[in-house]
Amino acid sequence: MDLCAAPGGKATHLSALLPDESLLVANEVIRSRVYILSENLIKWGNPNTIVTHNDPEKIGKALHGFFDVIVADLPCSGEGMFRKDSAAIAEWSENGVRHCAERQRRIVADIWQALKPDGILIYSTCTYNREENEENLEWICRTLNAELFEAPCRLMPHNIKGEGFFIAGLQKRGKGGLLHSATDDKSRFRHCEPAKQSNDKQSIILPSGLLHSARNDDTMEFTYISKNNRWIAIPTIHYPAYIQVKNQLKIFSAGVTLGETKGKDRIPAHDLAMSNILSKTAFPQWEVDKETALAYLRKEVLHNIPPEFSKGYILITYKEHPLGFIKNIGTRANNLYPQEWRIRMKNL
Image 1 (cartoon, helix red, strand yellow):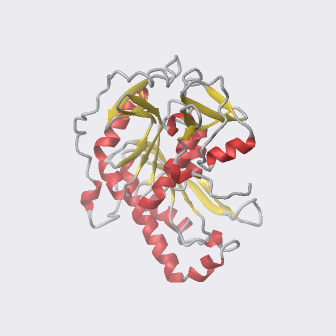
Image 2 (image 1 turned 135 degrees about the vertical axis):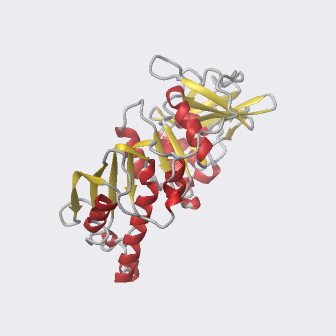
Image 3 (image 1 turned 90 degrees about the horizontal axis):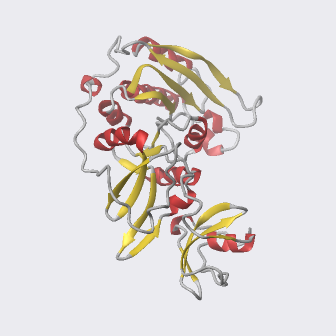
C-alpha cells in the first residue's frame, strides 16, 4: 500500500518496481486529490492497482494483516520545501512541528494493524527535524513492537538533486502487538470482520466490441466485472484481494475499465487506451503528427480522417504511443479524450 499516495509519483514508481504478480493499493484521504492520483495511475497503464479513498484508521480496522509493505510518506512540517516555496517558511512554527509529529504517530498507529507480521513499513517525510523523524521512529519501535529494517537516511538538498527528505524502513516484529497503548480508542486495533459476500459476477460474457479488447495470454488472465453498463477487467490473481478491499473500503478505481454500453454501442474507455493490457489488434490505429496529437489532447474535433479507416472507433497514436480513442463518423471524428484531462495551453 501507498498510504498517502497523491498525486501519484510514488505510486507509479512502485508500480514500475513491483513484479507483475504484486498488487498495489494506492490510497488518498483527501477527496479532491484522489482524481489526480487515479489519473496518473491510469496513464501508467498497470492493471495491478486499486485506488482507494479512506482514512488510515478505517484501513487499519478493516484489513488486519493484509499488506506485505506499507509506504507512509506522511504529512509533515515541510522543511524540505523551504528552498523553493517561501510560503512553507511562513507557515512553519515549533508548534506546527509538534502537531505534525503527533499526527504522524497517530497515522502510523492507525495503519499498523493492516501490516502483516514481519511486514515492512517505509516511513518518510519531506522535513528534517528529529521530532518528526528519528524520535518518531523510536516511538514506533518502542510502542508498536517494530525494529529498524533499513537505517534512517536524511537526504539534504545540498547533496542531492532535489529538495531533500527523510526515509527509513521498519519491520513489524512477530505478531506485532502493542507493547503500550498507542491510543485511548483500543477498538481501532480489533481484528476485522469476516468479508461480506460480493454481488460481483466473476464469470460474465463481454459484449461484442469489447470481447477482444484485453489480451488474455500465458502471463495475464482477467476476471470481468459489469457494473452500471461499465465493464472492468481485474487480474484474476488479484480478484480475491479486490473483493476483500471492495467489501471493506471505498474504492475509487480498480483494474482497467474496458468500456461501457449505450444501447447497441460499445464505447471503449480511455483507461483501456492507456493500459498495457490493450490488445494490439482490437482497434485500428491512426499514427498522427505532432500538430494533430496536440489537437487531440486539447480535445478538438479532428478532421481529415484518412480514407482507409472505416467508421467506428480508432486508437490515436503518436510515435507509436497510444493517446486515446476517437469515433470516426465519416466527415469528422468525435474526440473521446477525457474533458478534465485536456491541454488548455495553446502554444506548445
